[in-house]
Image (spheres, helix red, strand yellow):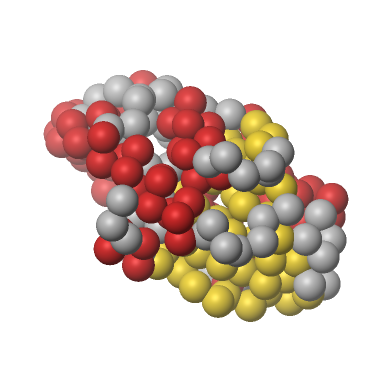
Length: 205
């Protein structure tokens, strides 16, 4: 059995400002650093054979904090980067909603109907990120693997594992910063052990 420990990066400056990040990067806040260290504490007695991270700075920084001084190799993966949001990136959610209301509403509420999006299509994004996860699983059979990525990446990976179609992708939108999702993989079967769990927020540092 292969076990995946999947998490989102810690809180960033742009998260606080309500900006859409996508393929652009924003540094972790003090809270974001703390969240990653807390998750590392939570997992310190959990076996992790190898770690994979989005190559974006916020994810790699989070991965480094989670791993800490443990002898775990962190492999950066471009295909685990957040969805490219085109001209929306760097703008606040409020501004994007005002300037592109119809497209913004379609993105979140009926994503399967989204056409002529200025960034990466959902089909391209899903193929890229799920493809990366499948390669990681194939290369690490029987191992315990940490994956550090982004909100939409985690959401679409979990949707894949749960066989949730695109039209229902955002029925439950929230993936919290450094939330932990655990998936057990046996062949083509996926068992969701935890999903978007944040118990480690209570750990005293």
